[in-house]
Length: 109
Ligand code: SF4
Ligand code: SF4
Image (cartoon, rainbow, N blue to C red; front, side, top):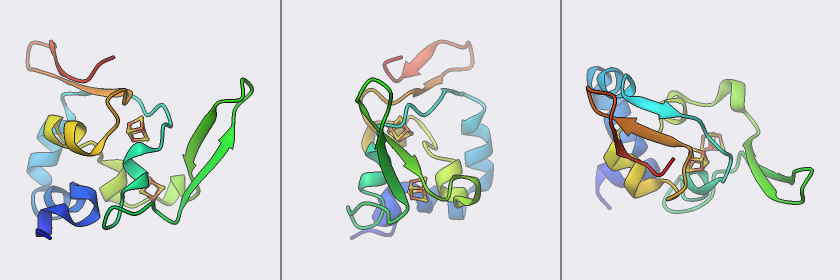
């Protein structure tokens, strides 16, 4: 396993390039819609121990982070970029990225 694949590919860029993260997050839009996908494969492809789930009013399963307020930076900054969004997140993830002209470049919403 490559170092960049550890922690579902999130940690590598977060730990080693804060400038890269800060620049990319300027172009991130949207919000988490609690599908849980990116937390289900968090460490070595396994679900994070802090991932919780419950049914909403319509009976759909919603996932949540049990330590949301204290979740690590690697989670707060995710998805880091369009590549991370494509690789580690659901195809219907609520986040997307725009380019410098505010045109959507990755993500479905
Ligand atoms: S894939 Fe996107 S919508 Fe789903 S839990 Fe992760 S950040 Fe939230
Ligand atoms: S700490 Fe929370 S946000 Fe981070 S992977 Fe676990 S459940 Fe997801």
